[in-house]
Image 1 (tube, rainbow, N blue to C red):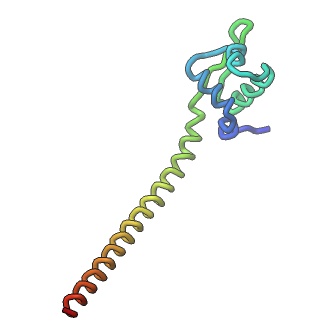
Image 2 (cartoon, rainbow, N blue to C red):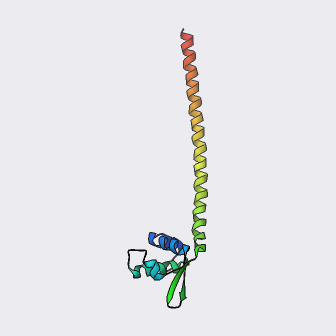
Image 3 (tube, helix red, strand yellow):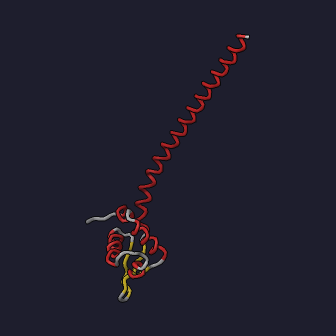
Length: 124
């Protein structure tokens, strides 16, 4: 199965693992100690992160250490950025529209108030 970065970060446990190994290289047991799930479950999460390129596993003697490779998150950042630009543009346009509507409503209200006050003066 082909995995991608988006699939990897979709799971909160995997996000926590990334946070941990981004701070320091940890062996698999050290990672597993931080969770209330089985060691095989942690191994599966690490395998997914490794397949996506977010974690690099290095053998040091008999132990395997996990290191973060955060460059892969650039894909996520670029994807989010395009939608951030899209929504910023849409929200700016909505803001301008609401400002125009507010001014238009204020102008109408002012016009009605002037009309009403001139009607009252002419009745006197």
